[in-house]
Length: 184
Image (cartoon, rainbow, N blue to C red):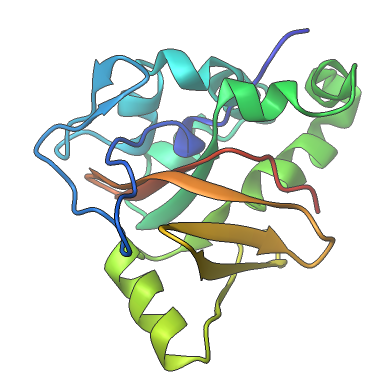
């Protein structure tokens, strides 16, 4: 199955550890490649071996220029393994030219306007009775909560997963790697 991963959703490299989000390291590694804070989301994402599906999807949806723009954007970037969990044929179907609008909707469902760090999410969770909710570019909502030593992400349709790498800083925003594809 071909896998596509939006460029903006493609880079991230500081694992979540302990009871809080880990802080970003200088040039964290994501998918075997260093992520440079002076490069934009797309420039970094194309180098991550864990985000080839996302990058392919970003290209197919025509979002490269947008995600290379000034932003800032916060991207919740599903890994190749996250895309592989979708029902057979889903990614191939989304990548077809006639489904570009649907693919764009899926990808923008993983992007929140502004630069939202792990500390911002953790602080909002603490201040809002254990939940932090953000509106995506697509118009949906993503909700975050603390679960043991990690943080979960969920959408209104019941899809849920974990943040696996937080605070991968980019020149035009921040990427947080997630283990699930959210579907609007």
